[in-house]
Length: 307
Ligand SMILES: [Fe+2]
Ligand SMILES: [Fe+2]
Image 1 (cartoon, rainbow, N blue to C red):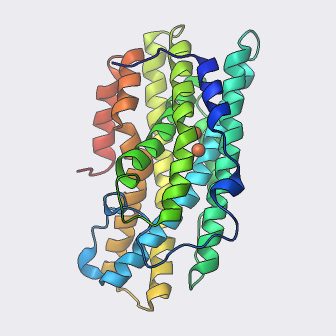
Image 2: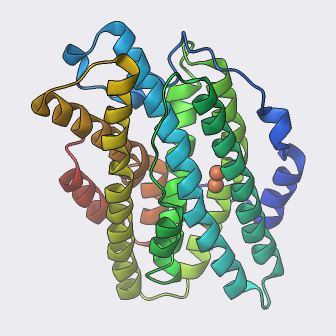
């Protein structure tokens, strides 16, 4: 059962207790161990194993981690936009909720700096130039494009999916590069409060919203999520091009497309489909709209072939 035995003040107190500084987590002169994988295989979802040597798979794994950090930092921009706007809406008469939402935004700005630094350290060590997409502004526009409630669904989705990948994949994997693991661990410490605050917001807002409006907000959320899926997938093409240069090998058109589609599916899974199907997310959705999980699950399965 969904435990809502906490309030905004509990989340703020926990945030005060565990708040960390960027330099304490990742110094600018830190060094990755490029002899190790950067993400667990379950997260990278490499379905093109037959195309690559062991060494090439390791490079693809590391490039996928770079993409994950870069995209995660840019997706935080959407959470900032949603949280700041929501804080403004609730400020009159709901000071504690507004404080909690501003705290989320403030911590997400710090997370962006953390992921930007993680990418910069990667780029300084990686033997060839890496290309990345720039989607932060577009993500912000998308998250707040459909009103308050779809934005809360989307931000809760993003908070929970990043938590899930750390707690269920990275934390349990002894082979993950230690610095990468540390970055994701410290991110997770603060995300835990964010998901709780978003859950409180969702329950509070839906208490005064009609079922028809909640139903509409779920469809709006799904459109935002799918648009974000289309955006993150565009990183895949750049990853394969960077891989070609890094391993000094050119793929023919069919193999390139298999690799690109595999990376696009991995990013779509990491940020979109796994969020739609996240058990805690669906539990919260069920709490506010019992028909919601079936709508979301059906759409998720139609979006991507998800095992
Ligand atoms: Fe974050
Ligand atoms: Fe967050």
